[in-house]
Structures are given as structure tokens and as C-alpha cells.
Length: 223
Image (tube, rainbow, N blue to C red; front, side, top):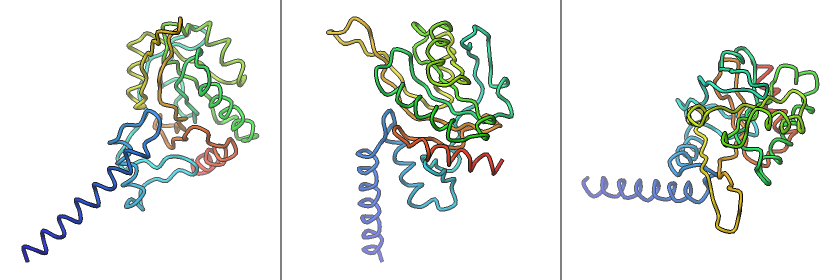
């Protein structure tokens, strides 16, 4: 009996060791190994957990989103209450971003176009993780290049940090010796936020606009 228990215990150690290794190797940009492990376990064993189409499956009980205090591109102070009852597509980045930010905001804009009439129920939002440089004026110019209804949000470093924590967004300043301007290393998910202010789905970088639009439309019909 004791030998059988030891064999089972050894099998479990091997199983979860393999899952941890797979989570480590397959983690997304800015995603910690613990989050990746939870997502992998959920995908294998969580048949009843939410599985957003074209998005990342979140473990049961994981809540993203919530209260925030920021400033929009017109200089107006806003909180989550200003978006109550609305669906949002939210992306965290910065205006000096050389590649991934404009790419993902372009995907978001194309997804909005693909939604057709349903797009009126969704607000695209860009939240800066670089408040030092991203003033409301800078954001106003930047978001206008992607979609006429896109809202840019910034704030004090403390306000931005609080919003990033609510969405579990990773970001950090990177200063390379050969560069005069610093970069911001950051995670690159797009969040679909429901009318209750909570995240319904996450979209990985390079999600096709059509797939994102289809997932958003599915949430809209279920609302």
C-alpha cells in the first residue's frame, strides 16, 4: 500500500513538474510563470471555466479590472464610473512605442470597423504606462491616428501604477546605453471589459482583427 502511494506521489510530481516546465516555456510576453501555470492548468482541467473565443482562458476566480482614476486626452479626470454600462477594448502601452503598440492599436481599430453597427456599443481605450512623456495633448494626437472614438488615458505615476495593478499589467522603464530615449517594456494583451468593469476576455498579441471582432460580438449578444 505504501509503495502504491509513493508511486502515485511520484507520478504527480512528474506531472506537475512537466506542467510547470511547459508553463515556463509557453508564457506570454509580460506573463509570470505562476499566471502561465494557472492558465495551462485551467485549460487542461477547467472545462467549466470561461473560455473566451480567440482570447486567453482565465482560471476560475481570477478577476481583472476594477476601479481607477486617470485623465483623458482632453485633460478631464475620469474613473471607471464614466464607462459604467459600456463594453471597452483596453490596451496598455505608450506613444513612443516603436512597434507592438501601433500594431495592436491597429488591430483594435480594424476590429472596431469589422464590428459594423455593433461598434457603437464598444469604446476603444489606450492607457499609457509612460505618464512622464504621455501628456493629455500627446495622447490626443496619438489616438486620433488609429480610431476617431479611441480614448487615451494617462495620469500621475501612482494613478497609472494602480490601474496597471488592477489589470495585472507589467511595465518597466528600460534605458539602453546606446539610446538617448528610454523605452518601456510592457505586457501586450488587449482586454475586453464588460459593463460591470471586469475583464471578460484577453487577446494575445497578433490576434486577427476578425477573430477579435467575433469574440466581442459574442459577448455583446450574451449581454
